[in-house]
Every structure is written in C-alpha cells, then in structure tokens.
Length: 423
Ligand SMILES: Cc1cc2nc3c(=O)[nH]c(=O)nc-3n(C[C@H](O)[C@H](O)[C@H](O)COP(=O)(O)OP(=O)(O)OC[C@H]3O[C@@H](n4cnc5c(N)ncnc54)[C@H](O)[C@@H]3O)c2cc1C
Image (cartoon, rainbow, N blue to C red; front, side):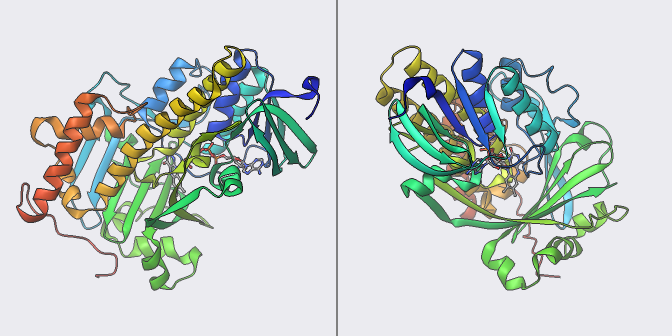
C-alpha cells in the first residue's frame, strides 16, 4: 500500500462533464482530488443539447456565471416531425408536471467541457491533461491504485468517468450491451440551415424515420449540428462508406432536404458507434462509475450530459460522506446504485417506447388524457432523479398501457411510417 501522504482522497479518470463535476464537488468540500484526462482540452465531443434539469444543476452548483461566455443557444423545447414533413409537434419545456426550469442550452461541447474542467481546477482539484490511466491495480474501500502514463497513483476512492471507454466496466467485465439498441451515428456542423422563426427556432428538432432519426441542434446564430442515427444492421445494409451516409440520409428525407436547401455542408463528418449499455453495479469496493462509464443511453432524448453531471455530483457526495463523514461505504454504494438505476431505467423505458411506432403516433399527437403527455415532458426535461415523482410514474405507466392499446385500437389518428429506403 502507498504511504498515506501520497494518497489522494479521490482519483478521477476522465475530464468530461461527469468527471469534472465530481472533481468540483469534492474539491470544493476540501478533499484532495486528482483528475487524469488523456486528451488535452479543448477537444471535440458529441452531445450538444442539454436538459432543463441540467440547467437547474448549473444553478445549484453556481455555474451560470462561469458558463456565461461559453457560446450557446437558449433551448426552450423540442420539436418532433416525420421525415416526410407534415404537422410537427412542439414540446415547450414549460409543459413539465413538476416545478422545473423552462430552458436549457444547446452548445458546442469543446468550450463547455473545457470550462467545466477549469472550474474544477479553480476549486482545487489537481488536473492533468494528456495523461491516460492504463490499468487498474487495486480496488478496495479506502485503498485504490492505478497505473498511468506518469506512474502509479493511489487514492482512497476511484471515480471512473472515462465515458464510452468504460475503463473500469471492461476491467471488471460488467459492461453489457443492449442488443436491441445498437445504432450508428453520422454527424457534422452545417452553416445556415433553415430555422423556424421565434422561440421554436431554438428547439432541438428530431426528425423521425423508420431507420432511426435525425437531430438538428442550433449551436449559435448560424451553425447547426445535424446527425443521423441509424439502426446498425440497416446502416450496414445501405453499404455506403461512413463519410457518405449523412449526405445520403439527407438526400432521402424531404424534411431534411428542405431545411438544408440553402445550407453549407461540412467538409467532413463524424461517425460513432452508438450502442446502449449498462455497467452494473455502478459502485463497488473502492469505486463509483459515473456518466457514460456507468451507462450509455440511446441519445434520442439528449439525456447523457445531464445523467453524467448528476451522477458526478452523487458520486462526489458519496465519497465525501465516506471520507469526511465516516459513513459506511457499503450503504453509500447501495444508495448510489439505486440513484443510477432509478433515473436511467426511466430514460431507457422512454427510449424503448420511442422505437415503437404506436408510441410515436401518441407522442406526435401532442396531447393525451390525464396529462400523460406532460408526464413524458417531465422525463424529457430530466426530472427523474433519484427517480421520477409519483405523479409522473403513474402517468408514465398509463402512457405505456395506451401505447399497447393503440397498436390494435387507434386512439389517435394513424401516422404513415416514413422510410429513407422507400423513395
Ligand atoms: C451520437 C450521440 C449523440 C449524443 N447527443 C447528446 C445530446 O444531444 N445531449 C446529451 O446530453 N448527450 C448526448 N450524447 C451523450 C453524451 O455525449 C455523453 O453522455 C456525455 O458526453 C457523457 O459525459 P461523460 O463525462 O460521462 O463522458 P465523456 O464526455 O465522454 O468524457 C470522458 C472523458 O474521459 C477521457 N478518458 C477516457 N479514457 C481515459 C483514460 N484511460 N484515462 C484518462 N482519460 C480517459 C476521455 O478522453 C473523455 O474526455 C450523445 C452521444 C452520442 C454517441
């Protein structure tokens, strides 16, 4: 065991939103925190549309001033529309059932992530960029050790915030991919994409098709992030190279063709495997998994950064309670596991419902009985921590039932399915 004087209270792997938030919470409370990030910041990252619960967290953590000059667009809601066009459905965040923030941000991740990391550094966390953690050497409560590019580092607790690398999940062999949610995403930043006038121009737009969906996220005055998320077997069957897929998808989709008619396309696009997975249990002897290192949820509802930062706070507070409060780590991780399970399983259920055409018909209809649409909106706003309130849970169960009934007995006007392969 390393001598205590060399040992940090917490070692964090990864400086994305989950890692920097965990570092901030613990450093502010006086813990000795070291965060290792393998890539020098700022660095490109996907995940540019945030939820109102995330905005509330910025407020709770006193981050709004620090984020003031990060380029962004105030996001006031979401628009859903079929790829063939027709009537859109608008979901302003003001529809939430619980008292909630009515806005969030759309933003480019590179400056946002860099700013969060700076705030954690200013709070006293020791942050090293360009240093990767290579291997987990020891994992016990109060005694963990890892091998890094700069030698071994020891700490009382380890926070894995390594994102989709899932360093600890792979080390422990607990990463399990959800086979029905295997997707591929193709995306890039466009100039001068058409936007609706007024507040709806700030909304994230989800364009629905049978093969998956498109996102359109306004990033600033002129730039819009566009992505196509496709079911992986369908993407493979299309048979084009990755750099051709986004242009192909846009050319097959009337709604996208129209919105990008006067736009400048990016010189290059990105591609990412977009497989949903869980690494449960999310906490164990000596460790806490946060953000994408804990679980990755299909990004249709833009839940990732919110879950990342909320779990970063929760993991940070659990370690504080163990180190400063002498609380039993076993009890703290049981609570942490419930926090991740209760919140993420709600998001997962909504994602699964989205891929059911019957749910889309109800959803695109905009309104449902007994305010079920407002329950869905509360979840979409991110108010699910540690689990959704009762008023949301029973309505969500009712929405699930209505989705099943609507498959056989039309409860709302039928919507024709739109396929990129049909034209
Ligand atoms: C196609 C797609 C679209 C998405 N859209 C959205 C969206 O609109 N809104 C949203 O909220 N979310 C979205 N997400 C999800 C979002 O990107 C993630 O949930 C979010 O970035 C998770 O934050 P994190 O801090 O857990 O991980 P990350 O932001 O990925 O940060 C992890 C960090 O760990 C570092 N790291 C990895 N391994 C090591 C190592 N061994 N040593 C040191 N450092 C290491 C990495 O360099 C990285 O900087 C999307 C995801 C995908 C795939």
